[in-house]
Structure formats: C-alpha cells, structure tokens
Amino acid sequence: MAKFSTSSRADIFTHIGIILAIFLILFFSFFFLYLPWSTNHGQSITVPELKGMSMEEMEKALDDRDLDYEVSDCTFVAGARPLTILTQFPKAGSSVKEGRKVYLTIVSETAPMVKIPDILKRSLSSAKNQLLSNGLVAGDPEYIPAIEDNSVLKIKVDGREVTPGSSVPKGSKVTLVLGDGLGDQMIEVPNLVGMASDEAEILTSGQNLSITLHYVGPIDGTPDGTIVRQRPAAQGNKIRVGDVIDVDVAGTDPNASDN
Image 1 (cartoon, rainbow, N blue to C red):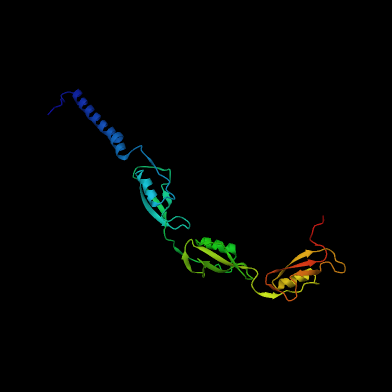
Image 2: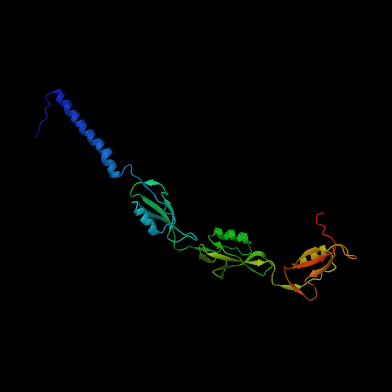
C-alpha cells in the first residue's frame, strides 16, 4: 500500500490540495454531468394540441412525445362528439419535461337529465332564453290557431308533448308550440259600409278583428272618412277571429304627406 509522506509542511499542503481537487471534481461532476443526465436538464417537450381528439388519437400523440395523461373531469356538451378531449392542462404549446402528466377534461358519452322549465304562456324570446339557461335547445317553433299571439301553449320533445318539470337529456331540442294570434273561432263578418273609419276600427277591435284602410279619393255625396266597400262582404260571411277586413274609404288619407 502506497504511503504519502507528511514529514514536511510542503507535503501536507500537497495532500490538502489533492483532497480539494478530488472534492471539486466530484462536486462539478455531480452538478454538471450526473444531475443533467438524470433529469434531462435543458431538454423540453412541447405539449401538443389535444382538443377535439378522440381518446385513441390523444394517447398516440402523447406516447410519441413520452408524455402521460390523467382524466380529471368528464362533462357533457351538446353537439360535441362523445369521448373527445374538451380541455387540457398544461395548454398546447407549453414546454414540459419528459414523462409530464397532462390533465384532461373529456366529453361525456351520456347526457345528464335536466327539467323542462315552466315556459307556458311566455313569449318566444323569453322561452328560448329560459331553455338555453337550462341546457336545452329551442328548435323551429310550430304555430296553431289561437288568440294568444306568439305565446307558448305547448312544449314538445321528439314529437311528444311534455309538461314543465319533465326530465329530458341535457341538450335536447325542444319544440315550442305558439299561438298564431288568430284563433279558430269563426264569427259573422260585421257590416262596416257606411260607417266612419274610426268607428269601424273601434267595432272591429272589440271583436278581435282588425281593418286595413284604402283611401279611394273624394266621392260625391259621401262624407270623407266613410267606408264605401269592404272585403269580405258582410252578407252571410264568416271570418276567423284575428283576421283582417280590407275596406275602401272615401276621401284622402289624412296621414299622407303632401307632395
């Protein structure tokens, strides 16, 4: 076994220098060689865009980059393809280390059940907003004869009438059945000929009818504003509640601007 001389002060300093050199070599080797090698120091992986991918596509994209994943949440989104990636963390483009776990939210395959809100007698726009806030979609409306104009009278899902409080899958398309403002009640056509136009408007309004005025110019012997003809005629005809009667009025339109 080799022996180191320590008979002089120079030998002692030499030995101390050797020990310090070995220590420094080990120190720098650990921090600048071993540690970077063991932690892949300076090497980073860019996280790919996973949103919209299927589970199979996502797994391949992460495997190719030596990344792992974990499904942290599952939620239903109307119209989205089930079992696809909805959100991710870290976001696409982030730089991470090899083996980093990417946390995912995926689109649920089964829609949760929600209740139909009470939208009967509401207007179309109000009903649509209420459906949207409950996670439901308003389809094309249907109209039926009814005096209630643009008011929700029935609710349908998949062609079947449902009542408020019924449970349906979230994202379901709801058909709103609205009144057309006319109704299906038939009444006798009132005789408006010879009446003043303002009186005729009051009469027809009280019968849930309306009139359209057509001024035909002055007529000798007939006061201006007098109804001279109507369509449909009054003799034995019937009209549906909410319909319009066209009338010809003697004189000129008082609201028309002068040229």
